[in-house]
Length: 241
Image (cartoon, rainbow, N blue to C red; front, side, top):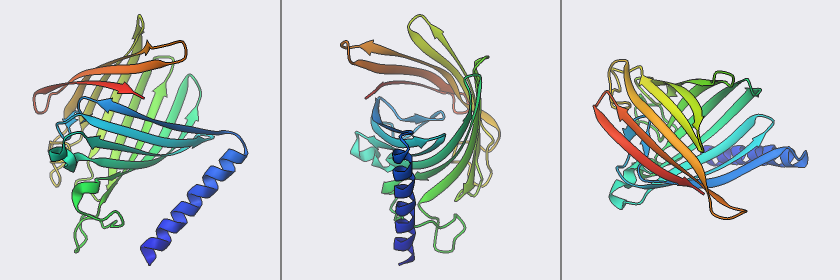
């Protein structure tokens, strides 16, 4: 009964947020999907399969609530299927912006019910959700972005990840150089694959829009990277719909 009440309260608050935002005509709704040749997250190949990744979000005066998913095309890799919900707040201008975000990571095929919010040390076993807090800073004049993310719930190792991005343009392409590192964890080293501070994600992403017609263009991107920790390279191609 408590779980049902909690879900009803969350749904009611979301309805209030959407309806009040829409009434003032400042709401921004976004829906779409990526199709990727591999789901590589922070230097880790999850599922080892092409994936379909839908997303839905609503933004109102800097507050964004959204949900994102990843579903493999290969049934044997379905353990990597994922649904993430987030809420974020962004302030700033064209020259500088800051975004604070809380993300809920949930794997529907883990065998744990979605209403189970146990912590990792619960005597009845860990829950279905890992919560992460993040902060990203974007300096438009450089240009440069800095970001850090910290698991604060349901992770015995409280794993953390840090990334620096350097976006720039070459001809019709938008390029982004990135370098990410994990702080490592003795209690849960499998999360990022390391016990110590290590660079685990280094590479470049190139993206552009291919004009299909006067009214439609298809965004495409290619990422080429390496995980120095495990000495493995990866390439990912994707399209955005």
